Image (cartoon, rainbow, N blue to C red):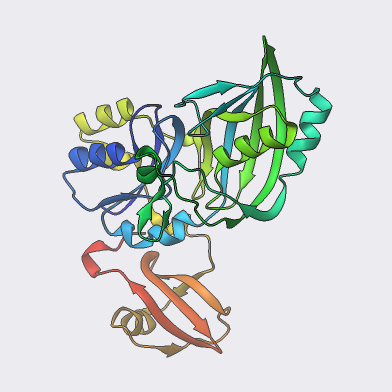
Length: 296
């Protein structure tokens, strides 16, 4: 079995828990995921099955889309609802001021990861150091946010929940946006809820929850949930003839007239063969699937 399952991860389990679920249902140990979701987050978690794990880098690096609820009026040690949480007294912004502040996060900028994250610095993992009471300062990273739309704002006694639609590049921490939004507005802020709606070319509208996967597996129909990985590779697709297929699959470079420069997904007779790179008309194999793993 080779492909990608568009899993709708519920709140609670870890991404690793979902990998374990698919290992049990498929009987396959070679399972991975493209882009971790925290336990408190739900939504699209691409699960890579079999040799599809070889394309983890390509599927993880694409754009993401989230629906986030950012609570203003309090701070969280973890920058999310896990806490501990401390209230912050003071006036809350108007909807207009809130939308303006959110607009300040659109573009490319340096972002400081949360203290409780999987990032490493000097051999230490940030969340482990933070839990030990010795948080480390993780170096900022460059991130890109395409769009932040304010979908609505709900107000209560000393708090405001901003519901946002966020489209961003890989590696962007929505928890950091919530924290930094609160700092800019002087209200404190943390991420109260998060749902990923798009990742790796997959949409929440087509995602399958664990209960449905269990039912498909019980009926011997689990393969219906597996998408061809080639469909999700966001790069040029090149179809080779039989002779070119033989050279590519044996690891040989070859001239390819008219091929676009750069990395490309390589196919033969509709089957994904792997990934190659083209430079000055020369195609070089980068990743080649073994014959038994190929699928369209």
